[in-house]
Image (cartoon, rainbow, N blue to C red):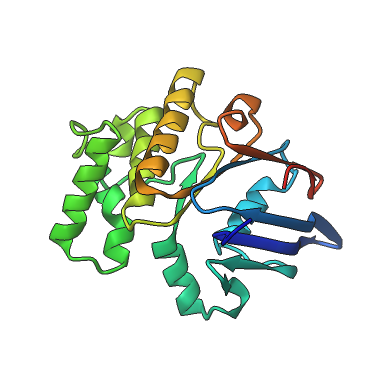
Length: 227
């Protein structure tokens, strides 16, 4: 694979729980091309969410390395990791993680405000993104006033506001019905194509995985198909 945006080499991750060590990932190797749509498929506990979090710099492996655009995440300082998570990566989660006290526009603008983007610039970007995801008439609505599908659209706008190169989505349709779930996957695909982003989705749903250009299957922390 020429010039992959992401390389994972010999990745292992364990968690110590009381007197027991839980092996979550067991030597995963993976390369992801720029602009690729990749699905990580597996049952609950297979390690797909852990792998996604490691690739996004939310956690660190016990062994192995993660290289993003030629740079090893293990060599990043904490400040560099924070900047990486805020600028290079966008995150979309199953449970949306919107702040209930903020309206849709304020939630979408949050990463830009954390990055100290001027208020007017952040608001302009947020409005443009919310319009793009079909929420032009919901800018001042709070999460409690939005449906699950609408909340996920706000979360997508929030993930994109700083112009990331990599979008990581962890079970983004898990709390949605089939119609809304299908619309969210189509929206993610369209946005990534428009913005030339790389999209990696973790899912247990074969129908969602089938939308991807490539599917990697994880069983008990090992990659058993694809690569």
